[in-house]
Image 1: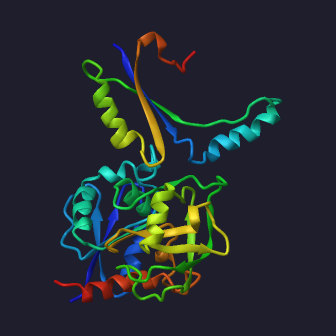
Image 2: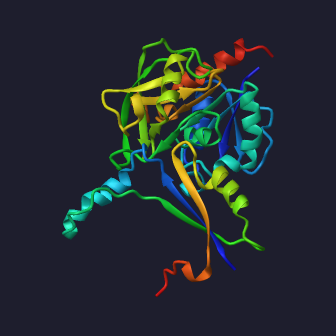
Image 3: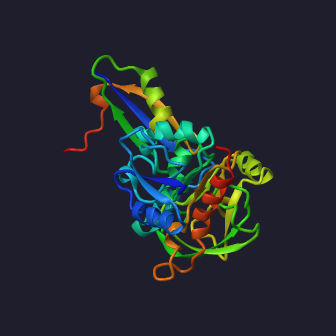
Length: 87
Length: 227
């Protein structure tokens, strides 16, 4: 069954201190060619039945993202694209 | 008759006890309200206390906003019920769209905990009417996500309508835009404040008694309010 993925990112004009902190740490790893880092949130939603993008969009708009400070995108991914954190 | 001021407890609220105590010291009867119950028990005003409701999961206040008590509270606030959101309560009021803007991670990423001077700029709200405009007060601030942000048009509107209730003086603890520490809705009955007036109501535990003014203000407001 495909899964719905919601990506939530801070709007470009909102300062992202977390991203800045990560960017500032990179030189300590010897990385010097990164101009900026922005941190967002990925949310995976499994519906009980068929995945419903409109419903996911509604969920994202009402709860997952705060439209005052964040933008979001909603997309369907097939099972084999799903990030598996376990090796 | 003694005014009854509700204090809501969410899972993860920290300052509900202190808020209830501040209400009592100000001369009102604190009424403990529970997040899972829609009933406001006939209170005359409500305080949303500080803390980490629902573990601050997702975003601060984002889940608390959908608690049963909030459904009733949002309607009541739109109808004029005085509501004070402190710290996490301020975040909840923004998430519930009772106040504009949002509270984000402190710009320097550090949790800030210190006694903070504020300048009261809007002394006409239900929660600040015992202060003088321009009066400086000393109140503890303690937050990790207290950086107030809104788009420029919203900030301009808040300033033009006199809805910036308080600003940080002597150093901005979290990077809030235009040093904003507290704002109000157009009617002046809903106030969100990041610092903690409930921690400045007794000489033994607070840096001042300045916080008491917020709670005595609502009592004054209720006496003057039409029944």
